[in-house]
Length: 126
Image (cartoon, rainbow, N blue to C red; front, side, top):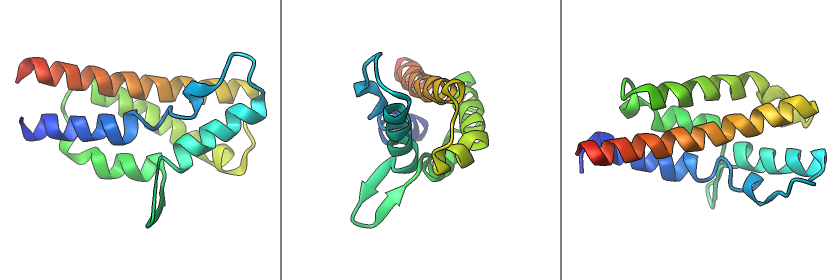
């Protein structure tokens, strides 16, 4: 496997899998409070372990350098991470409007999809 594919696989697993982990279990009838709780878990505690929690923003900063210039999928992830960063104060404080909750959820799903697409493309190309 190439280094680029390895980096994409890591990003898909470490970020793509967990950025929607709690949100995916919510039903259509979930309350705004339940959506916010799931978003906070997914974005602020994307990785948890004995050493503490790592948020999605820190994780992407660590995972993204080897992926720079790897294609439109990485550009999609980057654009969505910038959008999420702009909403991070509301995510952290727990103050998001219904529209912002939807925007955050969609951005997370788009990141997950972009990383899946990137990994599949790189597998085909290798």
